[in-house]
Amino acid sequence: MRPLRLRRRGPGFVACLALLGTFVIENHCSLPVFEAQDRFDHLRLAHYYLRSGFSDRALTEARRALREDKDNVETLVVLARVYQQTGEIEKAVDVLAGAIRLKPDDEGLFMLLHGVCVEADRPDLAVEAFERLFETSADNWHARRALGWAYERGDSTDVGRAARGLQLLEEAVADSAAVSAASLTFARHQLVGAYLRRARTEDAVKVVEAILGSDPSDRFALLTLGEYHLGRNNTEEAERLFDRLLVATKAPSALAARIAGLWYDAGHRRHAIRYYELALQEESPPATLLNNLAWTYAEEELSLERARELSLRAVKEEADNVVFLDTYAEVLYRQGRTKQAAALLRRAVELEPEDGEHRNYLLQQLKKFSAASGFVVPGPPTSTE
Image (cartoon, rainbow, N blue to C red; front, side, top):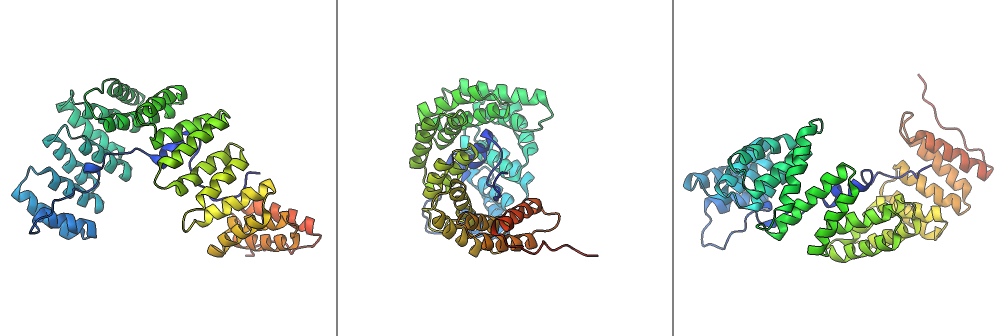
C-alpha cells in the first residue's frame, strides 16, 4: 500500500502551479516605497500603520490622504491593501479598478488586482472588474490579458467563457511586442496553466521552452519542464532541470522537498532521498520532512539507523501523530526490532479514531509486526456503549 504520510501537495503535473504560482512585478504588488521626508504626511502614516497591522488607523490616514489628492494612485494602492487586510475584498477590488483607470498602462496594478482576487479565492470579482476595464479599454494589452485569465479561471461550467479566456491569453502572448519582459512572462505562466488544465501538455511545454529561452533561470518553467521530463522517465534531463532550479532559487531547501516528492511519486526513491537530504539543510526542517525521508530510507532498506534517528526526531515533535508513529514503527521493524514496532503500532491504533482514515491500515501494520515478533500484542481497544 502507498506509504502512510502527511499530504504534501495536490495531484499530478498541474500541482507545480500551486507551489510557484505566478511571479508578479514588485512595484504595486508590494507596498509603495516612499522617499525619505522631513515629516510624516497622511499617506506615509497610512503606509506605516498598514505595515504595523493597525488597519483602522491606516484606513483613517489613507482617507485623509485621498481628500488631499483623490487621484493619487499610491494612496489608492495603500487603501486597497487596507481593505484586503480587513477582508473587505470587494472594496479592495473597486479601489484598484479605480487606480487602473487613472494609470491604465501600469502593469503592476493589473497584477495586484489579480493577486488580491487569487488570495481571496474570488475569481468572480476578477471577472467583474476586468470586464468593466476591458469594455472601456479593449485595446489595452493588460486589460486583454487580465480578462483572459479571469475568464479562463472563472466559472468552470461556462465552457464558452473559458474558451474565450484561453483565446485572449493566446492573443496576448502572440501580440506582446510593446510590453515588458516581466508582463510577457506573467502572461506565459498563465497560458501554461491554461494548457495544463486542459491536458494540452505539449502546447504547455512549447510555451515553457519559450520562457526559458528568454530567462534560463525562470523557476516556474524549470519546475514545470522538469516534472514533464520526469513523467516521461527522462530522468537525466529531469535531474538537470531540477538542479538548475535549485541554483536559481533563494530558498533551495524548501523547494528541494517539493522536488523530492515528485521523484518519490514517480517511483524513483533513490533520487527522492537525494533531494530530501538537500532539503534537510534548512535550519529547522519540519517534522513532515524528517518523517518522509525516514520512510523512504526504510522502503529502500538503506541507512536504517539514520532513518530511525530522523523518525525519532519527528515523533518527538509530534508524539501523537499516528503517521509519524507508523514510520518509526516501520523503521524499527526493518531493523528487526519487531516487538518494539508492534508496541508502537498499538499506541498508534489507540490514538486513531475508529472511523479515522488511517485505522484499517494501522491495524494491518499491527498484525504484521505482531506476527513477525511472535509476541501477541493485545488487540486494539473497542468502544462500548
